Length: 434
Picture 1 (cartoon, rainbow, N blue to C red):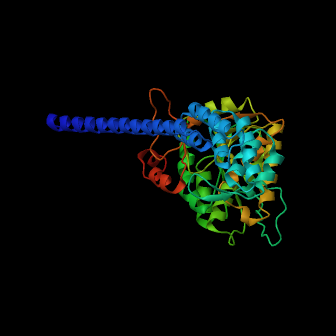
Picture 2 (picture 1 turned 90 degrees about the vertical axis):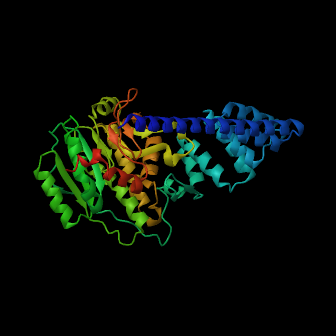
Picture 3 (picture 1 turned 30 degrees about the horizontal axis):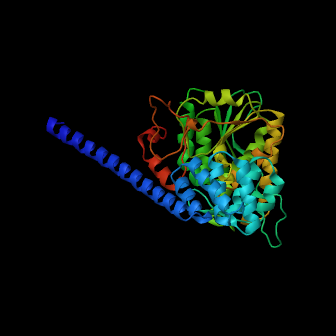
């Protein structure tokens, strides 16, 4: 590139950086102005609402400690009886500071003011479940509160009560028996197992790439793909992959899903891996990784197994989201060790799943994560470990190692449709399907 062209590019980039810096500075000044204005208003006319508004501004800026002081003043001016709006705000601030006890107290007060408050119901139920008070949490979740999840879809808290009796007229979903399609696991084979599930479309799109990435990861593993209602093309493709090496085998089930909505079918496919896990857990003497099929392995997962051998089950868990049970545990990846406690965990997860499937109206977004979270929170006598989030790459762009961060193990995604399209077109993914 000619020197002048290179100089113009550098100059343009510097201008962009200066503009971004100036915009950040202006934004800080505007926010500081609003806080000062709210502070003056509160001092001129002190009331619960004026200090509550100040607390809201401070909380929105991430200044939870100053927001707590403003809320304390609002509570003092309200003579210890905050209104519904400020009770919920105070609970959010307490959660951000890790004071979950105070958050529970404020949310309980909010529900005394308005027993129908959906925000207070969901937040309090999540916090109660997090500290192990599942019966009390389920009493709140039975109110069937709608919750907007990360991809914009709406789910309902009734799926967090899988052991409830199905209402009259409910239509049950009866999973078919899990059977071997090609190959079979041997109890004497000491290679860890990598288990995923898919419908026919996802099998044809991702199975070969996943298998190739695992064969290149530097660790010998056995790959099992569980397919729901495999098409003849999938049966043929699975047998070709099995013929390419003894590290691949497949299971399948035949389940009637015609009466389900597209959302219901997608939810069923997401949960199907747990049926396959229960099918093989008693016959495997090595760890089982349970993961999404639409991800690839970028480096050896040996660190993951070093971590899991000190526990019975390891999950991707985010304790800072204790107030949001649908996001507390991710179903993206889990490791199950060959221990009696882990088998009890799998049995509890399967029982919750079968119970939920008695009513097809429970097949809603995040059912797989909801039931996994319930199993984790109610796991008595089970050593549950935490998988570090740094092991996963969860955005659409290609993963790269940096000076301060090594290459993640798993290249996964958060929003399946748009992000997977980016992944399918990327050079890094292409090398796994050639």
